[in-house]
Image (cartoon, rainbow over all chains, first blue to last red; front, top):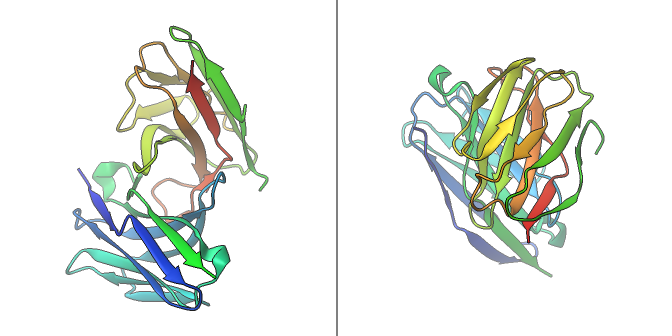
Length: 114
Length: 114
């Protein structure tokens, strides 16, 4: 079945620096790649997503890039702020055989130091 | 944060007891999901339902059961057969499962076995 690897598991940056989180996937039929942010003790919330027919998508300080050939996609956060501190999860949605369920990476704990 | 609710927020269970976690949504979503979250393990799918009176096992269904008698409700029962039930349980819902629709998460239930 589909497998999603997420790196790094922890990431610490200084406020104002950029942060990059990378995920690789195995199912070439995957067609949807969302990123979720989970603050401590709260529910995961979608922050950005990308479909397989797009290579890059940007929303203010966050962006996602997709390389279908290499089967990896990345989350980029620029000008990080302390409120960006959270656990970030990538996910993929596979082809029809997977019933369209999301497969999540194990998460990256981002700490932004003021 | 409205739209999908879970109760209770905290639940304590003695060994050998069955407990039921509630999940309700008023988003008119067809699909509903249950995930288990353990530290460093990401989100793992327990059960999902695409339509009323139908549901399928996810990756870790052993020791769990669900029902989907109403579109708005998708309760999860943790049975005594689940050997390690202490975890954070998240319910989610989305529009049509095979579309790109976002999954919305509930606030979660933290289950502890005493």
